[in-house]
Length: 181
Image 1 (spheres, rainbow, N blue to C red):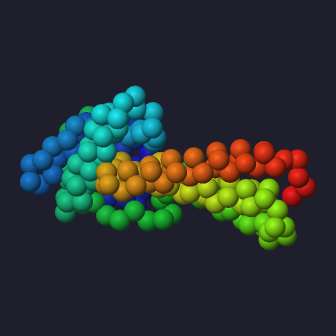
Image 2 (cartoon, one colour; image 1 turned 180 degrees about the horizontal axis):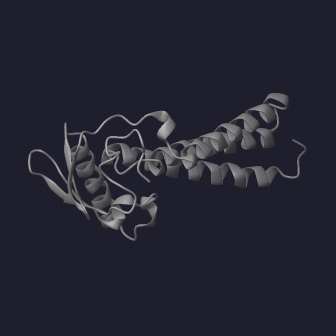
């Protein structure tokens, strides 16, 4: 999909395949299928994960230039990168943000009525941890092509921390279950 108000509107059409990016200072990077994967946790080794983060940084740096040459299946196209407006973010981004807010609000609302119960505290922690998971994943899964590798790595760590916290809080909730919340 080509965003109608984006820098590539009218220059890139649906069906064009972007083969590589070229920066004004002659830096070139070929686009590989791994570069656009939503979840780098699917990579089989830490070496692959680290390579992915390095390539994300390289792509980000090229896209941060004043102009970028896209090598497409139809030829070369020069674009001027711009900030991405909020309304161009995909549905999956907003859905994850909404789910995170709902989780933390339900956790906190249950905690508000019975703050002394261990089960309600565990339930509230699952809401907060789910918020960490969904917010971090929303940012990196909603990216157009690249985030700086350092930011991507931080978001991945937050995602993993949230998943571990969620697992621990959920298991703890089951320890106290059945308890009326």
